[in-house]
Length: 203
Image 1 (cartoon, rainbow, N blue to C red):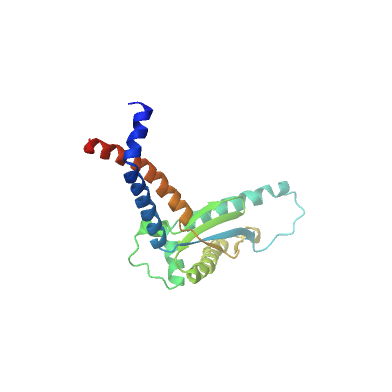
Image 2 (cartoon, helix red, strand yellow):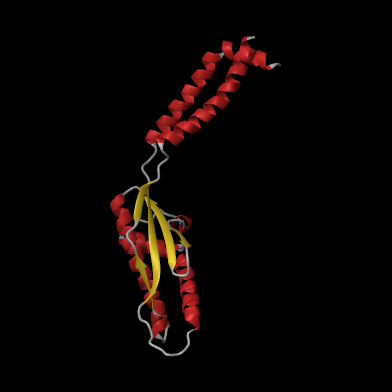
């Protein structure tokens, strides 16, 4: 078929083409308005030392200290991926975990190390106050785990502490403009085939 024939088909079936687009736009808009509210918090953790040893010895420009901080930061990331730590934090904010599987608890926190001493933690919940409490509980429980490691260290220079900032909380629901854009794209694609199929059966 030539391009002119396709244009003739769309002229005759233009009503169904626009009906399909409007239908997809309506579905996308309705879905966007009815999607559950989801808030996401971003917490920044910094690895510090509880004390600093005063020494005149050459310390290789603090190379070993930074290396130790990096290893401990990796340990903190692993802690946040543990179901045990996630359950402790949930219990601290009075949230029930009985119906949650181990895999669900392991995916509560998404942590990644940004540098030797900096960790970014993201987690989601529909309640703003719960996210704030989870931030405080996260820092508290991580320091409790760090304290257990500190007791095993003989040198105070190895005593780690975790300092948390105020979390940044944002609404991460899909925006109306993005949902309508996706609905429009699908509407045009499906509308093209609807017009052709309608023309085929009417013929």
